[in-house]
Length: 169
Image (cartoon, rainbow, N blue to C red; front, side):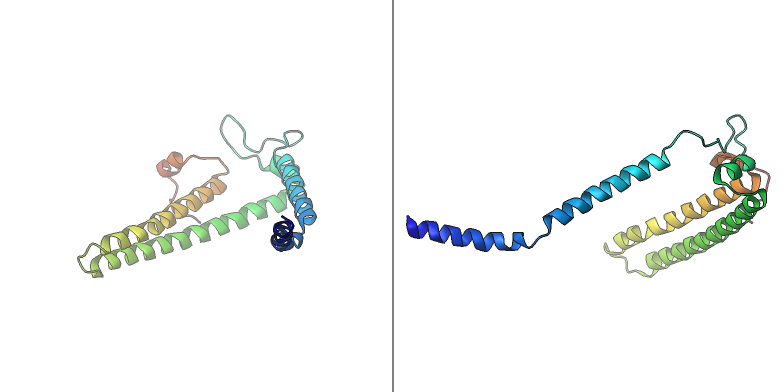
């Protein structure tokens, strides 16, 4: 029994040695710090007191004055922020639209240039989500640009049915 116990202790020491090198206390402290930070961030983003409503309920208009007061901005800074965001959404919409058409042309090329085998169909199916994703992103940016132009929280249906120009500017 004595030799077996000695071998068992030796094996236990060899197996336990790498676990002794792991900084368990520091890992636990870091995990708690991350959890506390996440709870603080959640509490900050879901605070209900004090902030004014930016979008009015009845006509869904954006109240820039309330937005500026809630963020501590002047009216000029708020207008410049809206102008800059309009430019950004227009640029992003056109870029996504160009990428969507490029991916659609690539999809067509892949479908037409591939030999008529069973391997061509999965390749086309793998490529098609990119095409769809870029078109949807272009539409989302165009909708956001429309909302900034009209200062109204419009729905996608209202955006499609409007008499205003469709293209972002």
